[in-house]
Amino acid sequence: MEDKYPKAYKEVIEILKYVPKESVSKIPNSMIQTFEKNMDGNYEFKVDENKSFEEQKILDETKAILAIIFRDYWATPFQREKIIAKEKYEKQKIEKEKKIKYSPDEIFIKKSKNNHKEYEEEILPAVCKEKFYHKLLNFFRKIFNIEE
Image 1 (cartoon, rainbow, N blue to C red):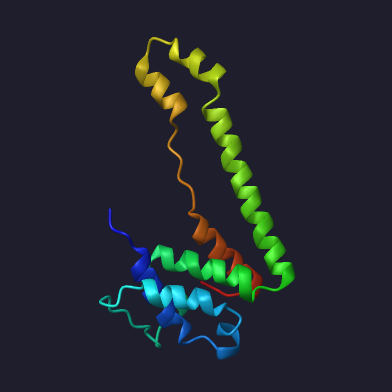
Image 2: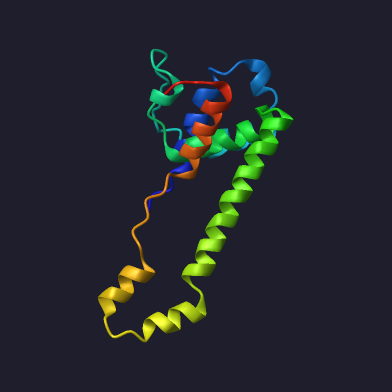
């Protein structure tokens, strides 16, 4: 499995070149130095100025890093509270689903059934969830009234 974070660090550094200096100055120098130290120097990435941020082809890891930077350094206290509350809610929801899905009582009851295929369908439903960073980006879009 390829480690994508060095490439993501390179993309973050390149994107930050297009962010106003007063916003970049809010990010700790140690964090920027870490990105620069650990980025993939051989990876070529250029920001296409003719495309919006959403249209840029960037790694999911880059989006996650930028979302964390936004939450921790650029968001207003109100925005930060909403983001943290949403993250907490999503974590609790996932934990609740795990608790239900892997409940020992339910597993043993369903395991006693003879039809293995029926068991798999009940315990492993097909779930299509929107990824966290998509939810986070959509959340920012709603806050700033940005159309997709």
